[in-house]
Length: 371
Image (cartoon, rainbow, N blue to C red; front, side):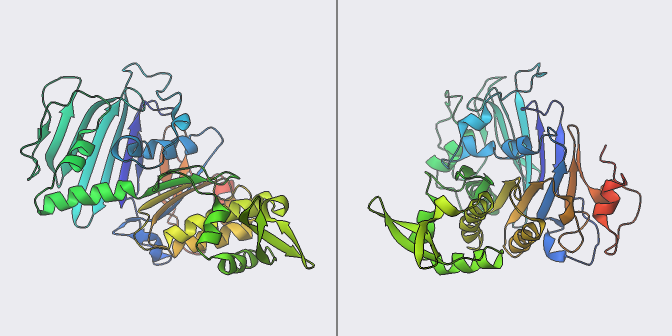
């Protein structure tokens, strides 16, 4: 679980910006949205330009230097905030992994170049390297005693160097270190789109309908679309010498992408990633930006309910207030964001929110102040 995230000097984040999932309340409904006393399913609202997309990019900056997973450098242009006087973007993560609290902090001059890194496990600093002050790294993990400490490449993470060059002793601390690396390796960000562009989890890119055909999901995908209100029949045709997905209309076939609406294409992308999310521990954390950009509100509700059933920490961004309801999530899972802060709506009012409250009506009436 990601418990807390902080960022400063990156893109639209000038001063420290804090996202805290541990600010939960003792609500007795939609309890599946909370895990280990922290928010496991979150929905983020904010005006255009408030930084919702940049928040996702900030959280996923970590995969650029700790993993070899899919990364989109173009998303990290204009890396430093325009007011950044230190020429440094800084990031802090707090995770709860098993019974351990893992804190990872680092600074970067750009998306590739590291200035410093620090790893703290259960309050003890086990790894640190400060390229600003100079000097060798500090590594206190058992089994890493014989590592060469001359690390001159500023694009090489000290944590990734340890992970790739040691067989650590089996200790609770090293287990927490390994669990941390597995969590980061399993993070996923994607956006509703006609193109399968994503960060994390995998290497390379697969065409979504090819994936559906290869995995034998055609009938299941057809049922999924039908349930979502897209009445259709699917089949396989040959296109350019390769199998391709197609609709069946009155006994005739039509190539899937020649007939599918933008919303249906977006659903197709979601369906493919949902298969991965449903594979137990395959995905540790998913961030879906503008998840319902092409959905009717009833379809958006269906998607949220699907996500509630998977064992993955999920963050969704949206502008759709019709799904700000206690039927789906709860007040400590709906976050309001502006350029300076992000808070759950339960922290944006002095009123004690209950299951019967109409959250959308209160939001539109200005009852929540995120400032």
